[in-house]
Length: 482
Ligand code: 5AD
Ligand code: SF4
Image (cartoon, rainbow, N blue to C red; front, side):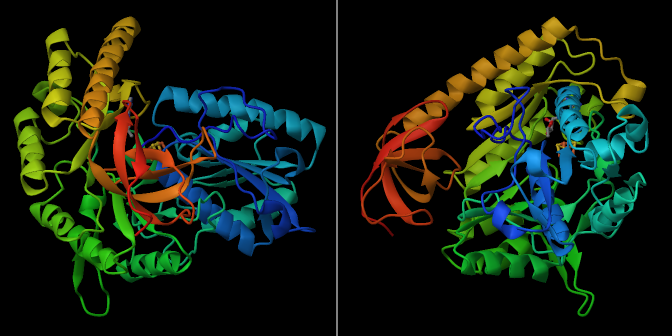
């Protein structure tokens, strides 16, 4: 579920230090929101969950009288929602903090807050390391932000990194400032109990807990009524969603939640991320198959194609088991697209084991993958018990081989779509040309096509594919709209 979210390089108001930085800044409407009031600026890094959390933070701060701004220079409160998943993610954040330091020096009184996973991982140590940081707030403590900000205004350093077993922010209506008005994320659960040996998430986001199903459906309904046409149900491990209705004792599992969400309206598309291979059930697959508006796309991270490495990673499945899961998905939904996360160069990985990962890409026929080389994270089981012994050059070379294999496959699969017609939800203008729309088909493939008069973002249209690259389908609308 980690993705290379839009960078901030196109926003003229923000100086970007690292072109590959993710970052995201709120929002067009910002300056009207609080003409006389205080303003906050927020940048987000990491997974979609973090971006979704920033919308919760924006809502909480809005209630406390803070309006959002995309202009760092006028902000009273600068927030950075951070990621700890790999060392590089943390380095990017530290670079951004240098930039914020300069703003703060120019405008004493400006407050800087670190939110999210890095806040959780480094806790009060952050305040010592980064002297100009005023607030350190972990992912379960955002309700406390107004309090902490008020304290910081009085010169106190504010830290709250308490991890909760209950917090799901169920009652908070996220402020969708960065939105295209068509697609939105809904957080359905928080935390992770899986304990993959490489992963810092169980330590930064705490124990798994599921959000009230009715509040999720209410949020989806509200979004639909406001013109949104697609929601992505988000969680570190959505397939282990499980919520018990305290009044009736009825248990809603992930398949049940998907059914409820699909019933909101046939024109509301449902997506979800991320699935752990061990938890995705036949019931979920059949529910997907039986509802046209549940998108035929599963992000099913394999991490490695080799059974010994999977065991060291504590993934709880092996190569054969994963392959059987892939077979089952294609058996139930032949038109389903599957994508993956892959880590290369994990502790003790041999050249032959690396070849198993390469061959898994071919076997699973991934439409795309997020690919990384292993980055040891302090405090994880792998850091404590295993040796990070694959040299960096080897990790990088293996990663390049994996990227090459996936790119060639994506290209091949996309070319197979030439001549096919897809129902596409228009998300907005193509980045390259305002004469073109961009949208996605059910398999989550990006489709670019010339605008036809009378169509708008949020419309479903049929597009016939005429050309393809490894990342995009290019086509032409074949019916006016639907
Ligand atoms: N090193 C490299 N990649 C990692 N991921 C998680 N932890 C690490 C790590 N220590 C990757 C996994 C996960 C994705 C979100 O990030 O592939 O699925
Ligand atoms: Fe998301 Fe994991 Fe990064 Fe936290 S560490 S922001 S959970 S990807």
